[in-house]
Length: 114
Image (cartoon, rainbow, N blue to C red; front, side, top):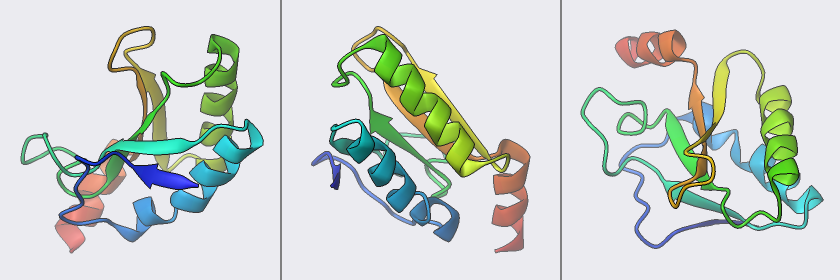
C-alpha cells in the first residue's frame, strides 16, 4: 500500500505524477516494503517541481539494504521511462529518499502550457 507521511501536502498533483502511484506501489510490494510518500508540494520554492505538482519523494531509509535500494531505483527508472528523473538522494543520511519528477525541461513546458 502507498501511504503518505502525516506532514505531506498536495496543493496540486499533476496527472503525470498521479500515474506513478501504481508503479511505485507494485515495485515496493515486490520487495515486501511499504512505500511512504515523504514530500509532495510542501517545503520547496515557487519554481520547484515539488511545488508545482511534478515531483514527489518516497522514503528509502526503511529498506533492508543498499542492494534493495539500488534495485528499486533501477526498477523505478525502467518503469517510468525517459520522461522522468528518478534519483536516490542523500544516500546513507537521515533524509535519504527516492526523488521522482517529470524531466526538468518537460515539467517546465507542461507548466507553461497549463
